[in-house]
Image (cartoon, rainbow, N blue to C red; front, side, top):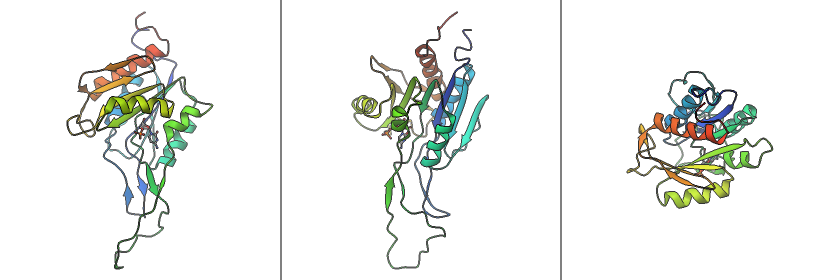
Length: 223
Ligand code: C5P
């Protein structure tokens, strides 16, 4: 039916930052609020999908009808995405930390020595790129690209490099205001088109994106 176009579909969404421990009290993270990913999960559930939302540490309520899995680190997020498969579509909105501490100290690092401690980092798994090459790759794989400059060029390059079907580009420079704000101005880059949506509330962005996902999954817009 027209009002539940994603009925019978399973959509996996990642959202929020990840948190990479340094010791029991310290971590590396970023400014992602999780709002856009939660809005997409909410819109997909409202459209009738079964939704698995893999969420980093954020203080947001679980949208109605969404199965939420809370994680901290990128490695945990990847494991949870893996367990949630198969899916008809995956929308990777999380701002996954690029790096984690190479060793996580078991006890709090003391401040007393003369020099500050060196923090040695190693790369986190790229969940989107991994999913793109996985045998369980969903028929529709959507990534996000938070950029501060050359937003469109970077998004196009990222779509190809990461093997995503679509990249949703958003401007996270101060002018774009997406990172912690309630509005977002996104551009949807596919293999065939570039569609710029006007600036609108993140909830509306979620509904617009979900309408296009339903269409891509072959669900007729009206019945
Ligand atoms: O390369 P960049 O981090 O800008 O790519 C952003 C896209 O890749 C987002 O969809 C994000 O969720 C995903 N990503 C990921 N795992 C990472 C880094 C990014 O899934 N380690």
